Image (tube, rainbow over all chains, first blue to last red; front, side):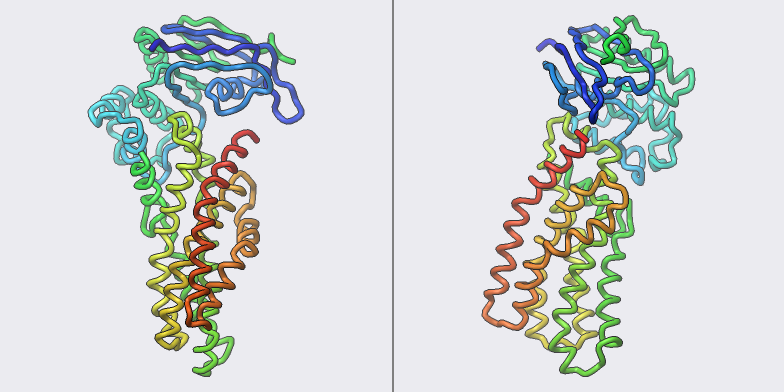
Length: 194
Length: 217
């Protein structure tokens, strides 16, 4: 099955406010989209709509292939050790323990396996969330501000991960106000502001 | 899949688990049983007659204490979003949480009812009715607690509010459960168990809907 993500004429309303209207996109294997825009313009809402976590006020989203979401919330038990916290998701996703170790190694987390998640820094927590996303092994990556809190090597690492994900036939949508060095179409959300 | 969920929920909720602190409801429960003779007087007949009811009230209040972090921490951390993306419905997540919540507080509560009964000088037939009643009633208390915890998870200062909301809903369990102490025929016990079963069947759906509503909000 080929991964696909198609959104047609999405209208987003939060409370009494219309955030944007008429947003459409269609992505196939190996394609990426960079959603750009200022704070509060609705980037996160768009990501959540595409993930199917938020119902759009109007419009349709069609997905084929599993969806992985990376946002500001790592969804890792703060009291648990990093290994146990990632291990829960690995068990749920059917990730092999070897693969989990490999991902953690690639992200520079291997030495932190015994550290409780609450002691990790912002950047380390972000890397841990990335390890969770990699273990999920899904074609559609929805990344909400993936570069927040990362140091320059971390940024390069994420860009490299996304590039490799695309080469492997994946789809990536990156919502970020920062520059993202992966060849991607850009969707400027301000043009659709209601 | 459900086994993985349940293992994590138990690790988080069991006393001595990672988040800890869940022995406090038990100590609270014992403290109430200990304080009652000081306040109500030490006459053995009075304690034997009213002690069972006091233990029931203490159990109900102790069941409220763990509600604060039962759902809200995972909601804030985005755990339910991640589960949703993996095709785990909110109802399954809540069913697992209900079982883990009950396992984390009820067996220990039943155990603590033994010293509490000794403190209140309960006769052995009352103790037997009390333990059976608590066994039948605590799943219902856990179900009410879970539904309320999910409903109030996204609110600020939800702890006091959830306590207030649980109390009126728990009244039927209290009436039939504590009532079974005075009626040896087991009818009260059967009704308590029936209410509990009904609540346990409904709670995952109510709590799941509450989590979806919190996501949209």
